[in-house]
Image 1 (cartoon, rainbow, N blue to C red):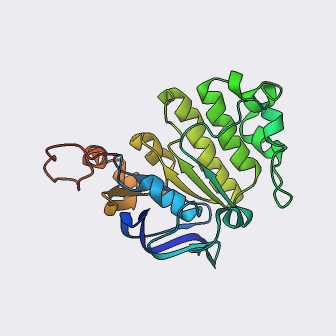
Image 2 (image 1 turned 180 degrees about the vertical axis):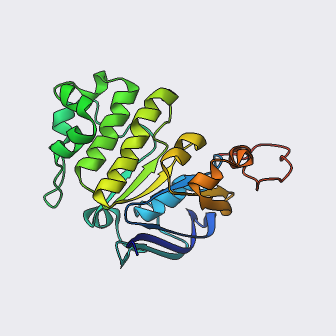
Length: 247
């Protein structure tokens, strides 16, 4: 049976004393991609930030690579093999592509060959400053930099934000490939539901911090009501709300 690289049990998380995520439980095994779907404000980003230690959970437990990290600081979680590609362009505009791969602490090494293997385009751009790259190239660099650290657990938040679907279609399969080839676990937050389900093994839909639907991606992909429900933040078959969920 594949090793569970991420386990979340009865997670409560939020900001200050205000919970955004309520009683969330999930697991991701080696070689698996789990898509976390739902409308803005559903708690997807909060979940990723809690796993990577950026925010402390209000309740529950987070286990990464077999270790309880519920109260562990972010740099120690990263040191144990976790990479978090945050929402937005996580690059340094003044540095070249190649210089990004020379960043890191003494305990961390980034292997540029791994990034260039999955994104050959980055090798051609290695001497160009990140600020001169297109939005798609910047996002490719952010993901490539994460892969260069050879994580066992990869957290990806809205890779497609601000990008054309065609570019996303080129990058998401790389996430699938990395998980399969490196036996890594991936927790993927993605607004393009259909594209996410194309590369994921399973999916969970959140609304207002709670699970409204979950299952095998191949099954959910055939359920057109899922696409409707995931954006409205309601269970399939539930009447549409009077107003959309806020961020």
